[in-house]
Structure formats: structure tokens, C-alpha cells
Amino acid sequence: MVRFSELSPEFWREFRLWRSVGNEISGLSPPGNFIGSMNYPYINVGALVNDGSSDASILDNPEEWFKRGFTQWDIVRLRSRIILSRTRASVNSLNNPIISRIQELSIGRNSVDVEVRLRKLVLRALADDYHAPLGNIGELRDLRITSNVSAENVVERLINDYDVDAETAVIELYRGSIPVSRIQRMFTIGLLGSRRFRRLVPTRWSITAVDSIIGDYLRNRIIEYDEVGQVEVHKMEYMGNRYFVILIPGPWRYELIELKMPGSIWNRDGNSPKVFADYERTRGMKGYAENTGGAFYVIRLGVLEYLNKVGRQASVIAIREVTPEYKVPVGIWQAREAVRNGMGVNIRGFSDVNEAINYVNASLLAGSVWLNHSRLIREFRSDLARFFI
Image (cartoon, rainbow, N blue to C red; front, side):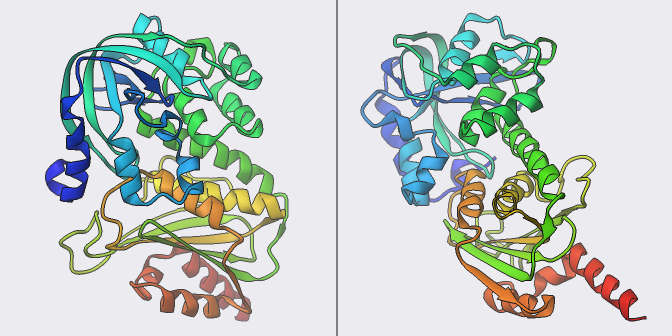
């Protein structure tokens, strides 16, 4: 978690504008929610609301942010118009009346009218590589929904089906064209899964869980496809993050290598890139991607969506280079949307892996640093060496 002292003055000025907000708000929820992870299993659970002075429908909509080409500071300005109206509860408190109302508004596909009474409002920055930033937090006394909440039939059916497990529900919603961010919203507030296992899930955990479930589903589809016909490099850039995805003919293997450059938000005072890597084979990874965290799953999702679209499988090296232009963390959604929208757009084909490596090295600020951390390249070269013995 990043504190105000670590963020630029522009960030702080945007959030300070909300100091005049009173303790009673008649406004809108995008809809949206946020659940913290501190002191689990007794956690902060909240609805995102604003005073109705701006278009609430885009305040918690990463897919739309990308479509509109929003910058980092556009996101900061948007999110500065939100109050996280929260209460403290156990992860099993699904019968709590306020939690039930937050659940109700969270299924909506459009903004929901709400009335909120707060005990107090505090200015406190919440910003990291998982969540879109928040900075206005209200301790919730009461929340009322004052309009009808509208949702798709598939959403209504699955939140009311207490026999279907959470993984199946997530996949059905995804196949039903429900945006990933909305699936995550329902997952975090305990609306999916069999009755016995439903509970509140911290937002950062639900983001990774949903990306992982959908990714596993897509991986199990593409491993039946033929391999890509040539080495390809797909290049994309968004908000100071640069992505290079190398597709190599071969069975599904995937690794993510992150390069956090000196001067970037996660390496402000460093003199050299910080490098992190995780890897999975055809059957996936045992456990969690400890080194690259949520980025592993969101980037994998974008790559797998592309491979599923073209009906191919590949061995994949994804490289994320975080540059000094990434000045404020806006959430891991930016990696998901950059890759899933960028795959297949800016492509270069190569006759062999070494040509692709040379191209990537010449394009990266960090040069060839990533090569020493690539397990897949080591495996590929070892396979070639055995072939020529």
C-alpha cells in the first residue's frame, strides 16, 4: 500500500477537493464496492458512492477507462470523486443488513441511487498495484438504496443458485459476456458459489481469483489446439507500462518477467531494474505466483484470450517493463486491459527465437537483463542442445 507521502503532489491535490463533503450524501454508486484485507477475517467492507455531480457509471469501470483512453491522471481525478463508505464486519457476515444492501447494489449493470449517512469522513490514500486508487473514506452509519437495481438474467440466475460452485459461476458469467470487473465485484461481496462456501473476499484476492479461474478455463481449451506457426512478438504500451509477449511454437508454457525500472513507482531510488519472474507449465502452477503476484494472472488472461481467438497454443514469454512514466499506481486492471486489447495489433514475426530476443533487447530500456531470469529460454536452449547431440 502506498501512502500520500510517496505520491506526487498532483495526486494529493485531487483528493483534497473532497474535504468539504458532509456526513449525509444522496448520490450514486457506479455501482462498486471495496473490501480490505487488513485484520482478516474481520475486515472493512464498503460501497463506492459519489454525490451525483459526475457520471457515476464510469467511476468503477476499467474496461471503459481503457476504451476512452484515460491517462493515469484521468483515473486519479475520477476516483477522487468517490467515497468508500465502509463498515467493519466478519467475512461470514452475509446476513448483516448493510452488507446485504452492498450486495444488492453490486449486481447492477447501471448506476444505483443511494442515500448514505456517515459517522465521519477521513482523507487517506489507498493506492497500490492491485486496486484503482481511493482516498476518501467514510465510516458508515447507514446505507439505503433508493432506485431499482437492474441485472442480466445470467447474473440473477447465478447469484440465486446456491448449488453451483464459484468457479463454475465465474466461467458462466464470463461466457455470458459479463465484464471481468463486474464478475470480480460479485465475487468479492460473496454473491457466487455454493451456500456453504459463500463469504466476503478482500478485493485484491478476488481480482486474482477471477483472473486465475478464467485463465485456467482458457488454458484448458487452448492446449488442444495446434501450435503457432512462427515466433511472434506482440508489443503494447499503456500508462508507462510496456509489454512484450513472445509466442514460440511449442506446448503451452508461460512465464512473466517484470522489470521495474529506476525512477518508476516501485523503484524510485534504485540504480538498476528490479526483476521478478514466475513460470507455469501445461498443467499450471502449484500455489500462487509469489514473485509477480496479480500481474501474472492478468497478463496471462490477455494472452490466453488471444490464443483462444486464433485457435492456437504456444510457449509464451511475457515481459512487463514499468518505466518512470508510471508515476502513480492505478491498479492491475491496466495490465489486463493493455494486453487483452493489444494482443494481435502490433505484431512482428521472426524466423527463430534468437531474432525475436534481439528485437526485444533492442526495444527494452533494460536491454537483455531479462534473459538471465527466463526459465523458458533456458529450457528452450537446453532442448535445442539435446536435439543436436
